[in-house]
Length: 157
Ligand SMILES: C[S@@+](CC[C@H](N)C(=O)[O-])C[C@H]1O[C@@H](n2cnc3c(N)ncnc32)[C@H](O)[C@@H]1O
View 1 (cartoon, protein in one colour):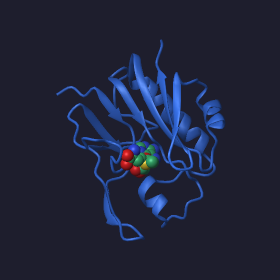
View 2: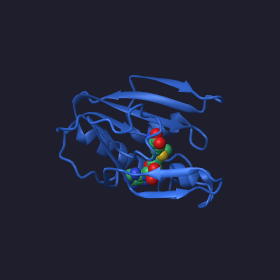
View 3: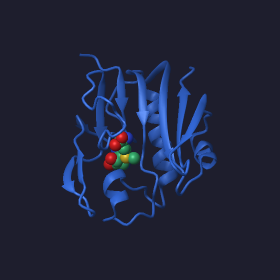
View 4: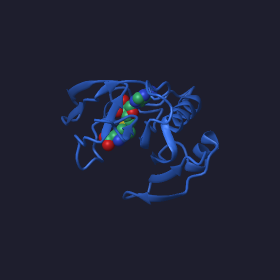
């Protein structure tokens, strides 16, 4: 079946209602199952191990891309945050996220949508948007402390 949606770093697929949605292909840079430092079970089981900085798909393959990259560069390697959400490289996070964003846009069809989720714990949205060099259509803050932002970008050309 042709996949319509790419989840470019699916982690545990927490925000998916149907974690086996047949319209989506789920990728992540790791495949792991373990009990986290605080006893919670973490299962990262992508359909394919791949790097969002170099996606193994043709240009314009998907109608929608979901991009929810790691947001913390200072989390301890063995912390729950790093185990569950991964970790940014503190020296190269700008380059890595820009490459990831550009790759997500490359594999998106013209007039397709990129759904982006970000947590402002370390890096403000304004700084990140300067890195992406593109403005979202609209966005929304959520979470107890409103640190989490959802944004929708459209590929216009
Ligand atoms: C914030 S978590 C995603 C959470 C997910 N959206 C969920 O609902 O559970 C970020 C994920 O990005 C993955 N990741 C980090 N660097 C990556 C890369 N270069 N390519 C693909 N995935 C990457 C991490 O392994 C981690 O699982």
